[in-house]
Length: 177
Image 1: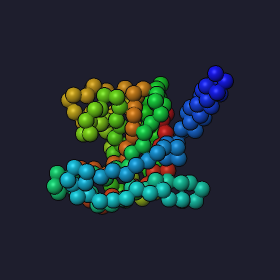
Image 2: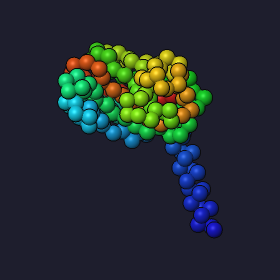
Image 3: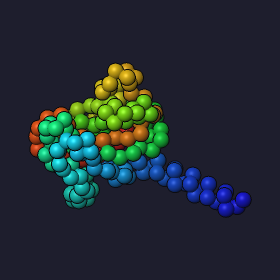
């Protein structure tokens, strides 16, 4: 019985510490690269962590192609359960090649791979802070709720999407506000 209680205490402290440290999802997330190749597309890219001074950033770069019903590269991370509950949006610090990128949010409502809530942002050549309110995220399907329930977020993706182009975007901070 003592072992179970000790294990539960350690689990509870881990959850508390994870919640406290989850301010910047770039540093605490478990990021995974995805591309349209899983569905026959031909987009190709890479996601990697890079040190930029005292900051560690995640950089998504590559060639996005709409050929063969494709059109995306992405880096995605799971989000701790209810991490965004009571928050009003997502703030990110980004730099890129001046093109348009997206944040894709998947929640308990998004059951199919092409279901998500999205918001676009521009990534200029200098670091800039962007705030994206949850109420402005748009659903990808009529089967989804009209508005995102931020308490049910499962994953967040940084996405280069929807047109033929060379993608290059870096994010050094991504947090709920």
